[in-house]
Length: 203
Image (cartoon, rainbow, N blue to C red; front, side):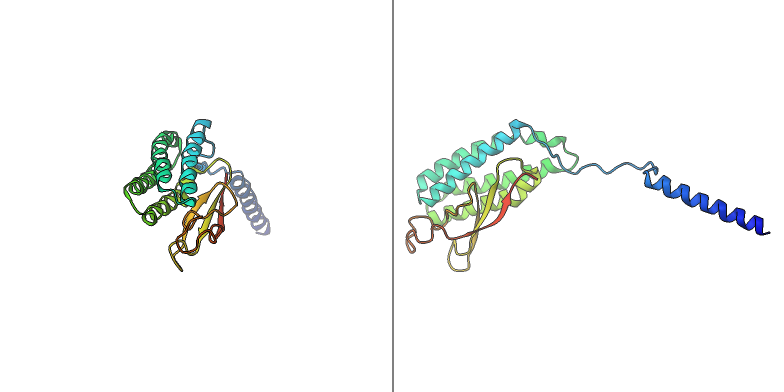
């Protein structure tokens, strides 16, 4: 009886060892989870994103100078360059990255086009704020941005006390596009009002 009991215990131990080794080597035959996002873009894709952002920075700089004509000119350029971004490349991804990025850019473009129809700089800046909010975090997180560092900056009183707004900058220096150099109330004293909230960088 003792021999039978010892044999049973030995069989159970052997089975447990086999099961542990089998499982640790991933022998369950199940499919491995695929990455959810494309991690490497083509040079062409990255260049089209950078070109569009170059026009965005022109809009930002125009608002620093309170130059509405220059802001609208840069905005027209921005809209054209948005259409040139090679989003089709994102269709190679395993998740719905293409659809997400496409919807984000549609919202960006809608607000940029609204900016062109405004006649008052405060309303133009409101549209610029919305363009910025549509770009980050949604668009840049969706595409897994690959490019030079950019900075998500914030002014706590962009449209009055307690009415904050954000924007994207290609420099760590704060050059406030909402209050700028020629604000009717503050003049140039609020040009550097703001702080960096986040860094947009290659992951």
